[in-house]
Image (cartoon, rainbow, N blue to C red):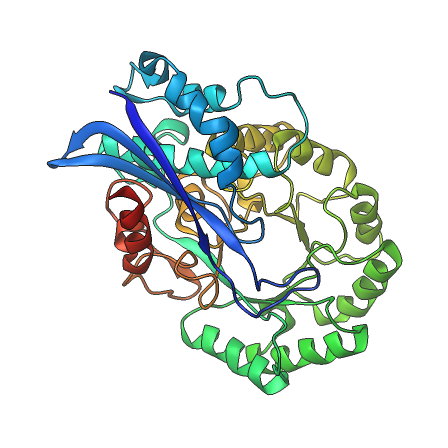
Length: 388
């Protein structure tokens, strides 16, 4: 049993949308295929992966450092003999060999993308959905049959007035979502409050709306928004300031009693620990958004969940960023609190399997081996082209 080859390519997910910090006019992502010599149902097992939006493709890093480490490794060193499968932990250690501690930046995305493809292959070799494999290995066989999801949108867009914003949010409710999210921080406080009120007119209550500043604010602006947002009773107030400014996050907690959310731009269990130590996050109400595809993959994600447990946090307080099927499998198999969803943007990578509808804010999972990419036809066409 061995990895024959790892292939990668960069694809465009460009669109004219913007949040408070960046636009997506030149956004890309990496797609990876881990080709093995294992045959299942008469076909060679290939695992697939891609990185979440917002961090661009990482092909150069993969080609320059990481792929050669796997190619040069003894294939036997990458095998889990107990489970007669590939060993994602040994593969991860090989990818990260000769890497210094710290510097959790773009390399975490490169490794996380490859790691996703490895776990897809591992579940396919085992002949089970990834969520089932994770539940069996780490949660005594107990998995969630469905996962709570929210619709992420509300981006700034040329010509997008309040009526168009309302139409977008109304469309999410019509498709079964119970909570929606919109961007703030790309306009004045007064204009953002008017946008928020327009959305609440559609969703019916502030508790069904989350807002996301994408790290835009300094401490004074973050606090001003916190005080202005408080009366609306929002679902959460997300990433007000720089993701590594734990003092800013802690200051917001002194002014804002409603739930906060952050973590999508933290890429290691060490950074997660520092957030929980110093960021003022409250385990009874706040949400953590670590994204395995951006943070060295599932191997590192398990370490992050261990850190959370040591610090008194339930995995139910985690709702991963990314809006993709990998995080959905983690949510079901590892008992997370839910998952982000991108119904209309970042296609074909956003969203879940074809034919699985959102019902009362929840989705089910496909019953096929692996992550389930083959059940999302538009995405699988991109992946299949790389494998072939």
